[in-house]
Image (cartoon, rainbow, N blue to C red; front, side, top):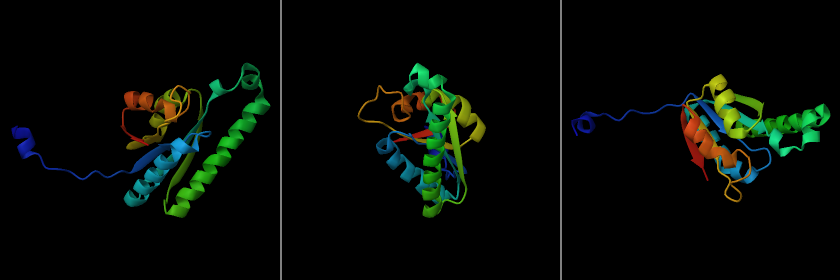
Length: 154
């Protein structure tokens, strides 16, 4: 009881925010992206925007075809560039675009977060089909395994 009584509330300031966007589910990414841009602008924070090339979405022949993989990577890069431009137009000053590959939750937790070192990770949640292997369906995996704060946005 004394701990709470003597405690002074401290303002939280974010310096680096990571938003996870799904390349094939704009509905689950839209509100999370708006929230991330709003926070990044408010705190003048760096904004990392990441999307995952989900190899599991490809059939075995597609996953072994360098041309198909290259085309899919380029599609994701173009999408991220669009997100980046929208963030900058909104007023976010420092935007970083990142593409990774693999299972969304695992790739974000094991590859992206350690490299980008955000103070906060923001992820949307897929409401329609939570059993698909998308970023929106992997929100719980990110929440449970990330070593930083994670906000899940609907």
